[in-house]
Image (cartoon, rainbow, N blue to C red; front, side, top):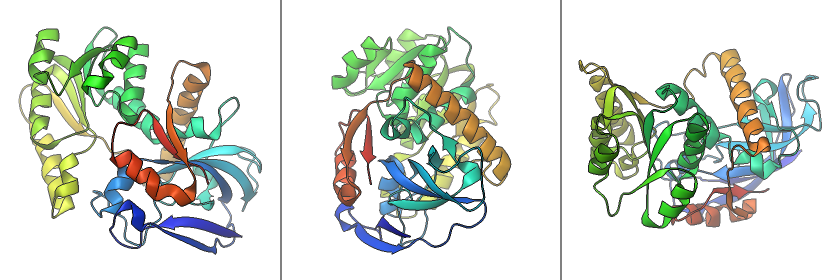
Length: 337
């Protein structure tokens, strides 16, 4: 069986992706061969192609943080995901391919009425949003701030927070303000407003949680927004994309968060890592199945919506990357092999 993959042979621009075909190999016991129906474009691929991801995989690399597809062959019979089942997988790399081999234990069934593309929209983004909200653990009625509230993770996190009864202040651009209001979010315009000052007006005693996907010097402002016992969750530090030594830059950011936890103010700061705990494979797969099943249920029920910005063929992955890089997207960018 052959697979077609999109490959970065070295750090480069989106257009430098190469297409290759290779033999996939035999399906070993405990593994499944999946025909990929949908995979996605995320910030992780943008960092990886530059060689700037904080857990950078070596080149050459096949991008693709997650995928949805059909099980076509099993190395060992598995009643949970028999041949013909549509499944989701969290991959980190390797998803931009027509066929993949994945451990069967890490596959999560995707049931009707969800399509492959719909399910794809909530794998990485939805898992991140769901687990970040759990980390904040704010009671109903509490206020949280979400930076990038209309982005891939932010738009899902906002919906989950509102569903949990939280008051949400969403930071976004001017053109997204009405969209936030329609969802019941209090909008703050980062281009026009003093964000920290506006948050203080809306929550004079501080907020229960802040979700920050930007990092950099502004992370200190996010920390100061917190009320006592408030929780700051950092998703990334965008400055790493321009750092000469990405790992050193990231460690500086990570250590600053840890130092803040030593201050006697009862606030907490965390860096969110979707892959935390992966060394305990059984527990990691258990939690993955539990959380994706919950997200798929919310999506199927209409409680959660996750729009698709655009869909590209696998061969046009470079164009899709450029689309994501240019900004202004309204939903998930899908690759459909």
